[in-house]
Amino acid sequence: MKIPMVDLGLQYKELKTEIDKAITEVIEKSQFILGEKVAKLEEEIASFCQTRYAVGVSSGTEALHLALRACKIKPNDEVITTPFTFIATAEVITYIGAKPVFVDIDPKTYNIDVTKIEEKITEKTRAIIPVHLYGQASDLDKIGKLAKHHNLKIIEDCAQAFGATYKGKKVGSIGDAGCLSFFPSKNLGCFGDGGMVVTNSEEIAEEARLLRAHGSKKRYHHIKLGFNSRLDGIQAAILSVKLKYLERWNYKRYVSASYYNQLLAQLDVVIPYKADYGDHVFNQYTIMVKKRDRLQEWLSKKNIASAVHYPIPLHLQEAFKYLGYKEGSFPCSEEAARGVISLPIYPELTEKELDYICEAVKTFFIF
Ligand SMILES: *Cc1c(COP(=O)(O)O)cnc(C)c1O
Image 1 (cartoon, helix red, strand yellow):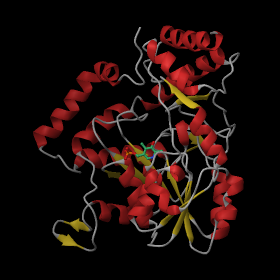
Image 2: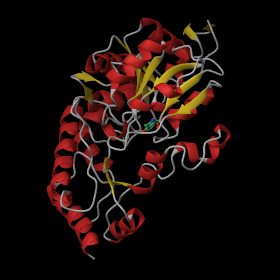
Image 3: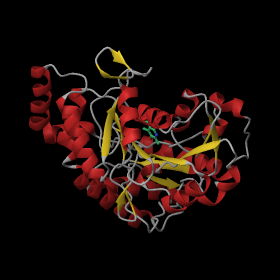
């Protein structure tokens, strides 16, 4: 048996007729950039997330970037986020000349520790970017209270959590803006790069629309300076087909995660903590172990893929050296970076494959 982290080929095979037809329609109409298919997808995603607006952009990174700009973040402003995330979350803050300010994670959920945010708020703080890591929402009520009290914007990084809920609401619909990524390995992935900003604010939606298309509403009439951050018609067409299956796929991920939890429970591993405020959509199934690197080698010998999200927290990245953090600045993030390992999880994963993976993990702990 050989088990990859995700099997995008299997998913394509299942939907080949539908997807090929959708792509052909775009090609026949030559609507390659924005256009009907993007507008249709925006409506579908706004309806799925229960937000008033959705703006298709060229990646999850651009969704975050344009959301920050639409929230009027300016050079030298401070934006609070977690160091235990993909670099894009903090990188976009620097696109504007603003400063990322990190807050350590809650070691149970791996999401930003809401009890440590307030001490980092200064008169320069303008926004918080909670990351719903691995597919589980951050504690948005507590973040919302702080934001209200200090007049801060909340930009949700939903790249790994599309479809997850917080107290019955879809993530992305709770903060000022929510940012989705359609990178192929996300829960809803396209065949390249893609992303979306969802929001209930007309002002934010309008601004994101302007910024994604060189600051213009009407071709060659530029109201302001912007970017080329538009979503492709082909990607939107593929995403519209796949969106219909997202809830089913997320449910299958949840079933696989429960199966893993059961089979790994007796071992010396920390299984994912499930917060009681919402549904986890398991973009990753991530456990904590003591001899992480050796386990990864062991699995690889058995043809089982695994990954580390993430081996170096952002405050210790070379690129963020200028922020002046050091080893020990965020102990929970550092400990997670040393111990986490993500096992294969995707909707098409079978029980037989899950048994094989868990058996391999078990034998590692026995020998
Ligand atoms: C994937 C990801 C992004 C960036 O999305 P892209 O579409 O790859 O630009 C941002 N934040 C997190 C947490 C991610 O996992």
